[in-house]
Length: 276
Image 1: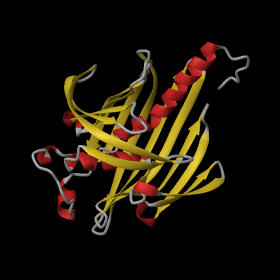
Image 2: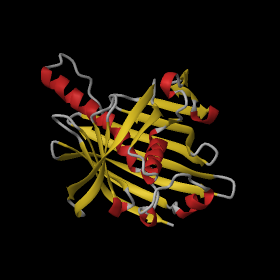
Image 3: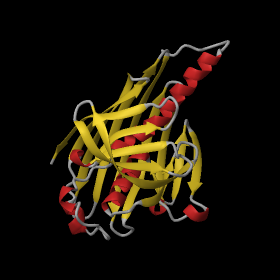
Image 4: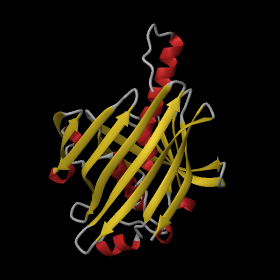
């Protein structure tokens, strides 16, 4: 239960700001996912065009992820995520479901999302036909989004209010993704050897634009798996505080995420499994 606060002190404001940072990080956690390709046999070459034959070699498996969220070295939440593939001769698509909780002092929040995504061999990138989201707590909302025109326009229902979005300007040809498919496209770009790329996400009330850059390899220490060499990816645009690490020993999944802040929430992968 969330208690309504009155006569707020600077400490109240500080804790609210910290908790908002944790909520902001929730979409970052979700980037775990979507790096769902098994690429060990492909590391030595760059994929320029993803044909159906090459795509079938990427080994789509049903996968499960568990992430722990830490703040001031204390566990304050978790995120669980599942990916289910439905492949046929005519389409390659998946459903992603996730659930997470964050609790810090007297503040609590839960996160639920279900998204559908598919790869377009015509446009050579992923598409997000639809996703839904429910958030409870200090930033509670219910949201549904339908994305059309090959990812270029969307209709969003946010707490029963309908809005329409269309890419404009220099981003007008970029597909709109939810956070799940955004991660899938990051994964694909890494497979293709790209070191700088722009992507866009349909947020609850606006379009978020990202500029990602691969910063190279970095050694990190994981409590469960020890010393790992991870690929470090940073956001150099509007969200320049976003830093992500991906582990080649764990299916190139997201293994760590943080906001480069004085008081930084940190997210660690704690469990990963796949069934093929």
